[in-house]
Image 1 (cartoon, one colour):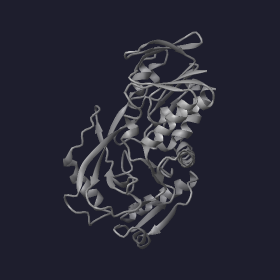
Image 2 (tube, helix red, strand yellow):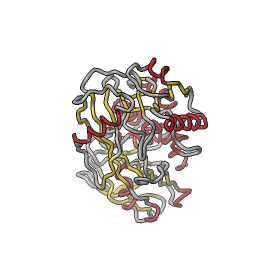
Image 3 (cartoon, one colour):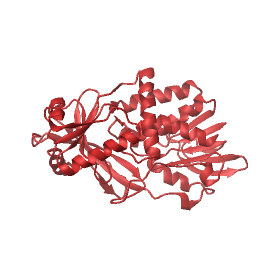
Image 4 (cartoon, helix red, strand yellow):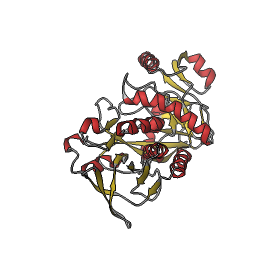
Length: 363
């Protein structure tokens, strides 16, 4: 089968790798000039354990399964990563009740090793921490996202797959037994494929609307939630990821580490109407306020604007978070087409599991 994957982010590369490894002739069309220039390069690089997501949701299924697969992949492919663990902290009774709810959900989702600990035990692990209790997640980790994508690309190309850069998809329609896909760019034209998988991230809705056969009412709205990050200019004080209790639209301004041990904070949730990747330094005021609830000794002037990412959400402010939306032939009725919408966090963690799901829908 000839398969076109649209988008060379972490999910698109995972799908393409799985397709090529299954023996399919696989091409990835990427509008940019490199892999992973969008969502995949603008996140926390966290390997999530999977305790937050509702029972039976795609996010729960693929995060837990994908996380186990991802650790195995990193080990077998030499991808830099570290299972550093994390603490979800509570600073009052209401938050204690919330993290107990998260622990129960994690048990339902079959997340390994979750443990509620009191404030003294949390401070024994992280001396700078201020909390009345915490949920310890030993399976949470961090990863070099770019190295991961390079490894996925290597596997894809080893199996004969290829990536066409600077090649946007402008139209795709079903003709007979195949999809006729129109590409822009210098080497554009019309080419035929047996199957098409839309992994275009923030551009997924636009790609779907370029398919005249795909019902327009099935294209969900796209809601943009910007997440800003600030780096810490001092020496790191935490060895684990530190998360507050979740907030509307995200998991709260948390401590994340890179593989060199550097600390940064984020993301917050900033609802926006159009793509914008500037970080307003003035937002640091709210960061100081939130961070000091669990790290009161944070000094003024130690946070510097770093970078931001945009979540491709399907629901907006005050609305319940939407699940991943994967629309395959069993839903829309068009052979050889899978649309992926709203693949935000934990998309990176879930990517290998999502890839197997997509291939199953095409079989």
